[in-house]
Image 1 (cartoon, rainbow, N blue to C red):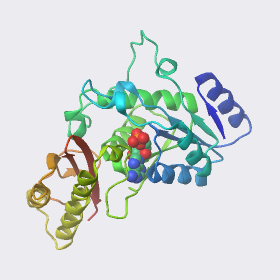
Image 2 (cartoon, rainbow, N blue to C red; image 1 turned 60 degrees about the horizontal axis):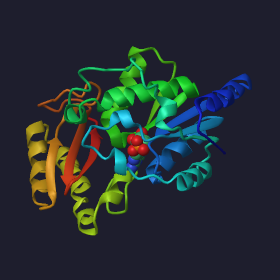
Image 3 (cartoon, helix red, strand yellow; image 1 turned 120 degrees about the horizontal axis):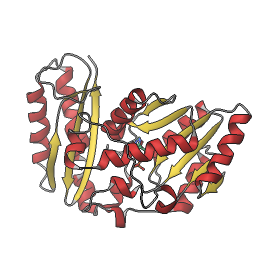
Image 4 (cartoon, rainbow, N blue to C red; image 1 turned 90 degrees about the vertical axis):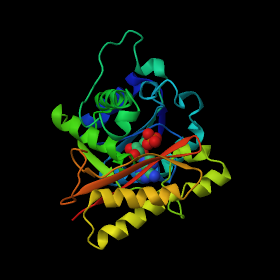
Length: 281
Ligand code: AMP
């Protein structure tokens, strides 16, 4: 596996892969890789001849009061994990390599980014769509892999690929969890031992909601209420949002009649965690 820092070096490899008729899978990440990322890289390796993993803490998707400066990094660990999962290239550019100081062109989407995390993190999805578009142009992948953990991101990228006619298949990958149910996340390292225990309330509340749905309940408000009550029992937890939305448009639904996404965002102390599940009828 090669660790590359420049766009031109990645493009040289991509050109060679294409000339040899090889397929390329892309796995965009912000590094500090864990089993969740690994599952994406392994899936990409099983479906493509070559896999490019990007390892880039994208500054333009962070808000002014977010954790850009303290976001955890460990390139050596990321390289080992990526290689063991079958990657051919780990692309780790500096922000100055990715962005011109005087760049004026960005990728924006609307509606689908005005809700959930998009409503609470202004500019976040503009940063995500822009960096993903740039990575698509650099890596020219046949397929790109995204986790269902970031369900809104996956929906936004799928829509962007459709709307802008990218010839790339977007593959959603299931959420990988810790043994106690907490969705794996690079940000879990911020949690104190006490907060780490409290954080299990996210998956627990969603599991309870799934059981209620299985009994036939179809009133979205009742599902939201059940999740809210569960989370409120945990003193360290503070709800950012609990919603029931259409899984494609991400618009709120009141009666659950087709496939819905149930996403939540919860502060555990100062750390904001997200989780979700999709319920198919
Ligand atoms: P990040 O480095 O957090 O930007 O994540 C990079 C990719 O890995 C995104 O597509 C995430 O949705 C995905 N991902 C992160 N955590 C998990 C997880 N626990 N299970 C599956 N995919 C994940």
